[in-house]
Length: 448
Image 1 (cartoon, rainbow, N blue to C red):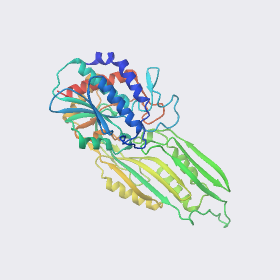
Image 2: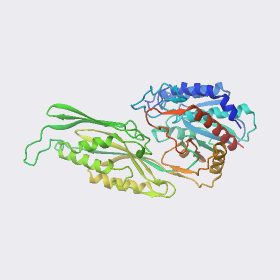
Image 3: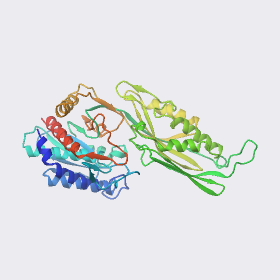
Image 4: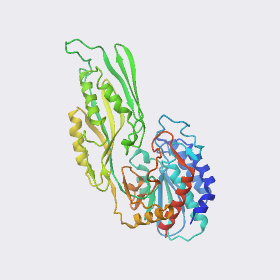
């Protein structure tokens, strides 16, 4: 059911997707009528125009979100996806916003996260419409514009203005179905240095090592990305030395999959003859953050059966001779309280002379594996793929948290190596078609 239709729609879907991928829709300054920046607004306008040309009813929800709908009925089911992307970063072979096709793959920032999957859902809805099969519920594809910023303000705004679905999914995580999403804490921390603390160090004989100071330090493009580049500039006796560290980017929910460029830089800075207070600060950060990603050295390592272990990503780092600031992306187990984690963090940072400046929080999502929505999506996945996997948990945060009765459903298959938040992001075109086939069937089943 719908498989042949998706094959026939493949070329049209690829053209539409590539056009949207060429729109740079990372975080940009808000403008009048464009609350999440000009790029996100253009991507939303393009998606809605594409949907309208396909014959769907569409609406732009004040630039925060938009939707395309088909069918009739008192109730509505929905697919939620986002058109904003994380910054491109470095290390791309092809231009990151070119939507280039090579060897059956589309390369571009947003190809898998999340423009490709939401366009697969949109064209899956087209396959349903073209089939003429009756539906008991309306089906709505909802486009968001600021998912990557973490607070889901776009969906919060949508919820105050628009109808909420009775069930649905977001194609922005793993197959077969996500039944548990860890809680998310984004924590900003800092330490400032007085003028006296900023003075140069002295050797054991009392003579100064030399006029060495930290002129600047910068790493990270977004708190939910593993930094792939970190750099610092030291001023040594009036001359400048630049220190650079290279890493491997990854999604902040899986810091173990990347190589954080901050770690080598912190280790190096902790051994420089900087002012003693700053040496102590870098030594603390090296011990607390640059040795592991499970929170053990911060005193926050916890785990549970439904969702696994806590993870910590140092996603942002900056400073100069007067301050050091950083940002942590922490994913914590679904049965654990955020208050205990914050209390432990505060105590640990205080030992290093740091304080917590602010934090944002998304509570965990946890639903029973035997719930009707889980069972429906699992049945569709197994029938379409022949795979017998079980529902899974994730450290990722998706739109499933933003509305009741929504779960994450794909697009990543077990064992896939798709580079979420990494250079050379891509989606395989054959996989794009398969996603459309799976999502069409899932929408149809939920609309009965």
